Length: 336
Image (tube, rainbow, N blue to C red):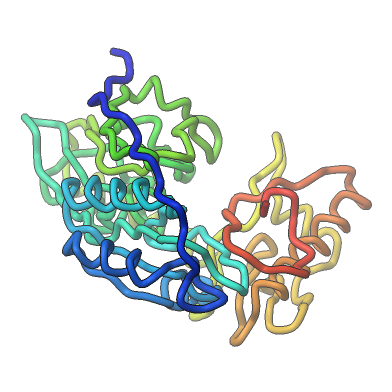
């Protein structure tokens, strides 16, 4: 099956009027057009409220569509007015820079649809939490997503980064993914094989927003599912920090090794830059101990990378996604 789309021509962006203030890109007309879509909308929303790291400056606008139709309508308005779009899921794998995000942030958290298709398939919307997906699959005695035990975030974010644990990854269960193009509002459907899943990545285009997916599971006894999930959660609880703002693992594991092992071998556990800390509980978790800025976290990221490269000859790659504006931040290359 090849990607299919509903044909449409991208609207021409009108000439831009001066914004109402010197920080936001949005004019009064932009705000009025966004409100007319009818979805939940907040202006100048601090992104620290929307990420598990509790870090990030304001978004010019935060929109929360509750259906694919609202999502498409919102995208078309942004395209017609030349407004940049940034899509986020549950905010569990994001570091937002201190000056925030210009344009419109579309959060998919209200896209929470879940239905059973036939005996073993589930159609899930991108804003559904990974925990609720796992709970529903368990109740229906469908195995295949046990790897989500203790994994935070949303289905959309999980698909985009092929989230997983030692029990599996999204690539193992994804049959189909539906996205919306940000330049036109077109709907695109891909098979799982066409999504280009790899280790903590996919080939889903950055200029498309994940709307939903069809997951192919398999019959499995509830007791067996719960046993695997309990073991996974117990393992994670023993190894990972609790009661501190975090984004989970910051770096990808290099081939044949573990980022946490390399960082710990450098003696970096407990190292701080401002209120950002290399967790004493797990070296690959760089956490916000309270009041950390993105500048603090990015500086700590660079410190860790430099030490691991110098002592082990390994260039660590980020697993967390860095977005937004922060002039003067000494951020990593991926944070452009």
